[in-house]
Length: 221
Length: 226
Image (cartoon, rainbow over all chains, first blue to last red; front, side):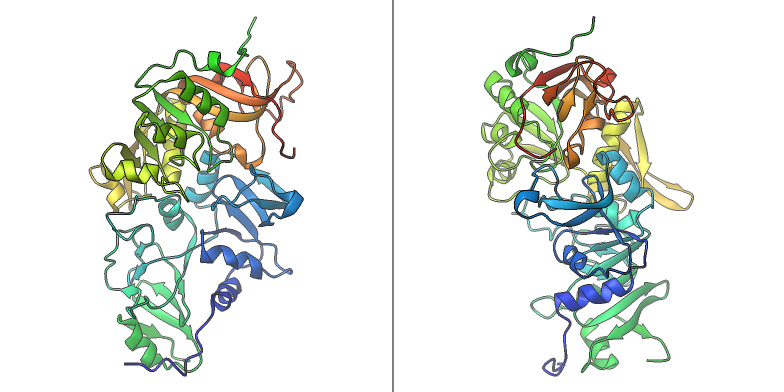
């Protein structure tokens, strides 16, 4: 059992800021509903990063407030948003041409599980009581040039979300490029999972044990 | 002379029979043709198949038809919604059929239907439960799933302005599925906030050319910003 009391876990904001480090100037980016959307709060002013919303908007601005609210200008989570200068609006097929045609540079999604091969499960748990709903997850997972996953490293009961094979229903096979968790940043490479960085107070060996699947590391670490 | 403007909503939906297959624009409430859906509710058609991104929002529009058990099948990408459980209850009870489609595949199936294409291969969904039973093919080393085009009897769409030829412009992200759905139905009915004189819409900025629209009905100005 690993003692996590000395480990400085990343908050959701910390994970968001870590992801932002890997989003270059000029990138077209789609942020999934939920935690990934909070990344928009940390985009640096010195980089022009264009946010795409699957419902037909490029150049999405912050959430709308007060008089700026227009129920016909919403994000993928159906919240009223604003547009930045240079924004454009298009129909749904064109929006998914951007996604499926490989024109979006980075997509960030949440996940229940990611496998060592980069398979992702993020759209349903298989609970028979829940009505299945997929939205744009399957299109985004495969279509974006790079797929980043933002998630907690462990489930509430302490199970690793990094797995040999996903047990939840799959969203896409071999799609994930990099995983950002509250404990570490882990790239998916052809040989498996590569730990890029991990938080203070956590040794590589402890990260390896918590993760439950083989991790590689660069020599410099 | 071409006159696609219809006097009122009831007239616009008068001939929709039981069992009709209907496309409806809208992403949540944005672009949802609420007034047309309300008119269909009043008209009484039942055993309907609806194709839309969501299975209704709140208790208006498609949700109202679901609640009244007038829809036998939903083809959509995201049926789950906040604070309204009628769809879930009927789905669990087996009263309503659900064909769940990835959102981009839904849009492309509709686009293909409107373009006279029978179907297409896409990587989206390969290896997942949504590809079960579908043909697959490896193209340039990438696994693809065959998806069939969608065509419908009617399309209900919401636009901002239109003219008597059926040319349309939209409002912000309310555009969503409108332009592609207009192409994929035998009969497209557009509700607009304003009918303008022929020639008033700039040909360079018309989003849906009138050839795709058969009926247009003016539902008056909505109180949102232009």
